[in-house]
Length: 529
Image 1 (tube, one colour):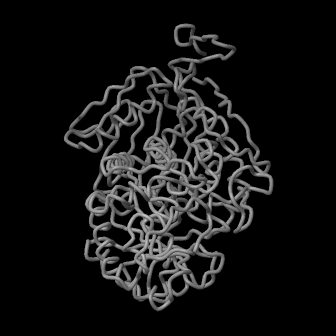
Image 2 (image 1 turned 30 degrees about the vertical axis):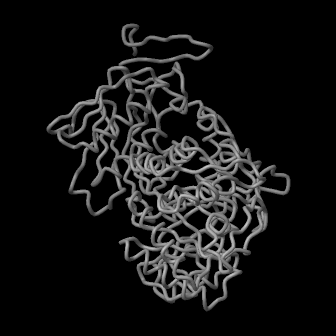
Image 3 (image 1 turned 135 degrees about the vertical axis):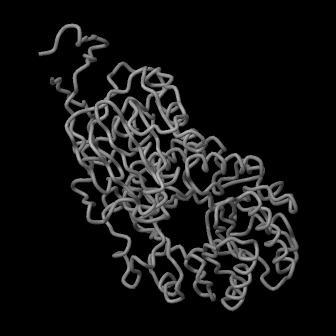
């Protein structure tokens, strides 16, 4: 029996809130986690986060403390709580929430975590801080969807009890954002980063240059942004990131354990650079700015030494403000470059990237050249011939097949945004594939991971981004993280449908696919002794 002293019921806006000293029965196995964890065991009880709940970290672990503060800030708007973050010599076993770095967990990898929840405490353990951060996203999803609200919500903040052991299938799980065809502000990019972080993705590929614009300040070549950054598709005013703004983006991503991969596309897709500097053109004449959407018509002067000085300067300045290990050099659709010149160009640019102590990524077209085994080829085309050439050179592949992974593809023929040159891409088609089974000859050992590109010909606002990204992004996150054996469209679509309330609390402009059973989740609770 529950006494009146131990049970209080508050009626607020038609919602009955239960707060008591007794355990609340909940089933962890019925939670709708995306990505799906590697293993999960439910114990039938729950933990309640209250205004008195504290977050504990090990003394002297600065990154752990930073993650704890992130968690406290995350839950504050919806709960009204201001959790204290305390450093303890040994927080293991403490009531409340403990974030613990444990060298004995090294075998699981840098992003792995183990989460144990009972009625008194939550213990999150990981080998590295990245694992703690990924585990925080699981705690976030185990809280009611109202946790995403930006104002105080009246509900009990219950988390189902049990244990989760979790780690990613692939080390590279990313998305791309094209900020060239249409320019997006620093705040928009940060919002995109937050969306990736929420679903345990760890790479943001920024497409920073193309025919329509140049979006990153290069101090040794200032006209790139003065001229090349001045416009965008449709002829509207463009924009660019100063190096300080870019570093702000990089730091924001680092705090969420996301690596920024900057792309400077070359030798094609370079009209903005060619309009900025006449000497980069074969004929020595500057091109006119371009605001259309055609491809394959531009090329740097691959036989001029000034071109390679330009590339070296650009990469040198980028490397100085990019702590991640990769520089993406594009290399796709270079139809205006003769094949022999293209091969020489890619070989030399690869050497420049390596000279600056970074690894080169290129669209799979670069496999026409002689690739170093440390380089990476990104498979995107509808036919895999170039990706297979890369595999034969022992080069790792990022899987981004346009017909499966391009988030700028329309969902169907009446979608108001997107293109369809690679076909329509409904939510089931975006999820229902296996990376190593997509192309015969590309096996799991050949694959670095997955990336879902978003090209910006048809999008101009964060709402536009959200419409094309959600809900497909969640499927890509799961394909990159969860074991293939755990993945099933029929089961996944139910979990996805129950993200509805969370999306709406986050004010996400998501596509309401008819293939998904969208429903709000009213977590039924049963009070037991």
